[in-house]
Amino acid sequence: MSTVGDSDWRLLARGREIPTAGGYADQPNLLLTDDGAWLCVVTTGTGGEGDRGQRVIALRSTDRGRSWSAPVPLEPDEAPENSYAVTLKVPSGRIYAFYNFNADNLRELRLEDGSVLRRVDSQGHYVFRFSDDHGRSWSPRRYEIPIRAFRCDRENVYQGRIRFFWNVGKPWIAGNRVLIPHHKVGRFGPGFFAESEGAFLVSDNLLTESDPEKIVWQTLPEGEVGLKTPPGGGPVAEEQNLAVLSDGTLAALYRTKDGYPVIAYSRDGGAHWTAPEYLRLRTGELAKQPRAANFIWKCANGKFLYWFHNCGGELIREGWDSACPPPPGARPLDLQYENRNPGWLVPVREVSSPDGPVLEFGAPEVALYDDDPLVRISYPDLLEDGVGVVISETQKTVARTHELPAAFLARLWRSVDRQAPTVEPVWQVAAPGEYEAPELPPFLLREEVSGVCTRRGFSLVAELAGPGPVLAAARPDGRGLTLQVNPDGAIELRLDDGRLCCVCCSEPGAILPGRRSRLAVNVDGGAHLVVFVVNGRTLGGGAGRLFGWRGFPPTLTRVDFVGRWRVAAAALAVYAQTLLQGEAEWLTGNET
Image 1 (cartoon, rainbow, N blue to C red):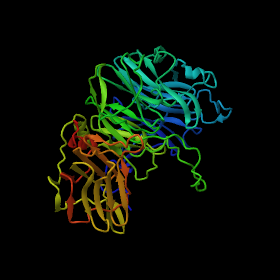
Image 2: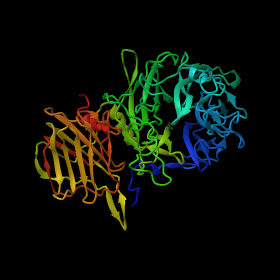
Image 3: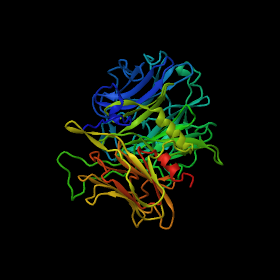
Image 4: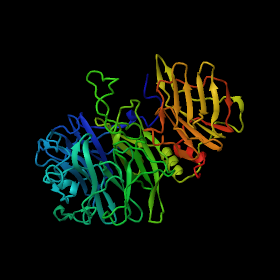
């Protein structure tokens, strides 16, 4: 079976590869230089993540990622591990790269339990080099940023003599101030980083000072403790990244292992922060997130894009279920780091609140996916270059860039502004009854001796009076599709091609008895998933499920097997493409 199909830009393999060392590739950070090139700094190595020889390289592209210059290492070949670079361009055109550096060439770390850790890329010194020729070459000397110790540093196994940390958050400019996120690690343990919190390295003169020796730094927030989880949350609060709002308010978003991302605001430049809260979408639904990067970027139109994975996390599983022992050589999945496929984008806008501007998060939309559910797409970056909008990503071995189509972005921005979608239905009825069926796109077609995925989907929008049948469009042998609301209020969609049968259900209570509701069912034939939207709210699975969306097999061929549909809904519309969730929210009553 061909996995590429026609034209789905979201498929991971359709991106353009960024050349790396061939083993490890992480955190491809993009920047537009003043001479119009793309600059990418990426952490790479011939081994795996954290292996000896890990290094940061810089590459330039003058043809929007079609080709790249030879890599320029930021440190000499013989240097110890250098990792996780983020970049900043200042008004003069100078570009800074900030990164971890194992300057002391430590080969192991002592842990609290007496064991030894031989991964040494997340400690040492935080340093920078700079380029005055648009990333072609870098300063011969590196410079270290002084960082104030927090309680977690002084209480580590070395009493702060050795600091544990890293950073994935891009530097941001707020007024005349530069802020660089800094992720402090208190201790290592299950899941590698067992305790973490967020700080910020702040300079008030980096934008104007050309002598790196004269750059002044302070560590925020004030006090002994950085940004952590909300009360009752776990010990992991890391990978903070920033959004700067119109009045200079800072919004920090970060990951946990609690199953939800966190947001906090600062209205005094990062010195103090609001109480951290788990992030909610505009509808009130909690955003779900495993222990994976969730980033936010400000776009040229003043709005923001937020990257996350739209599913929950789960603490590490020790061993295997005794009733189902592992096959030889296999290992259990650590679910707190899994479920990074697909990657989703949320359009975000700034709105007013009694305390000042805050961020309002729209509906999640699939941005990138792979047919292999265990591929982990993460550590993206976003670049606007005047021609288009590009995101980078990595699965830890291959880094790529992907262009976001202008039409997709236009639909995103309309949805976050609560404007009516421009997509029209191809078929609709306004009363229950039996009708000639519309044509639905197939998922899989024959191409010579094998199948090819069409990457096409459809959406259904129905008006309901409560639980019960909605649509019967299947043959007596099951082939086709049926849609119903079960007595417990769960929505059930059945897709059957006679060989494969897939039943996708929402959480119970999605449809309430005695209440008129509007329902949208988005069937995405590219990412092969189903999303339910009810009364203007994209369903997230509730507290009891990791996933709100449901998947179906990529080898399902088609579901249009009958010539007439029996419609039990008060009204039903069919769209010959998959609606965005934001569009479905508007159509089902996004103001309710």
